Length: 238
Image 1 (cartoon, rainbow, N blue to C red):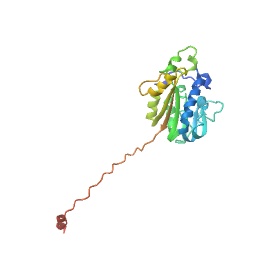
Image 2: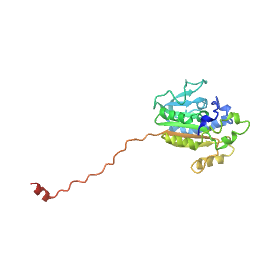
Image 3: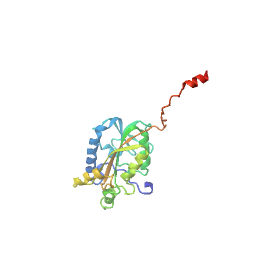
């Protein structure tokens, strides 16, 4: 999917600028609080304003750094997300909250993130589901200008394919709707999606870990049979 051919909206400054944004942020924070204790390391990179508004205080990550492509309150550094100013393997974790759908080059952002993360580093990623209720809500007159174009939304299945190609292992996934009035639907989504069917939820959140495996093949060690000696062979040599 080439998002460059479609108008890419600027990233929002706050969750309140999104439809049901505060509710979505609250639900995402619950997931981060649940997943946080399993994350450890020193440096955590948060990208753009929506990521900065979320917390990973329940984790064992020591330092937060906020990066954005334009000046925002609380930003530590400005930079191009497709050319991040970090040494390879210098980050322990990265949080991309609704970053890909507001970029013309989402795959390039994932490549840069993979380079900046250390081996076994963590990536938390959220996005709008174009084939769920977010894609449908995009056509509502009151929400059209408050959601990214559905063609720039990246489906969770596509994101998982990209992550696998980049060497990530998706460890956890969850889905969030615009409303919590149907708890049975949320339970069904956790049990059935995406193993059996795509999720109809508006928002997805993924927890992935960068994996590295040795590229040099290891030769199989085969047992060598001991030489067979017979007494008559020794007499012939004498």
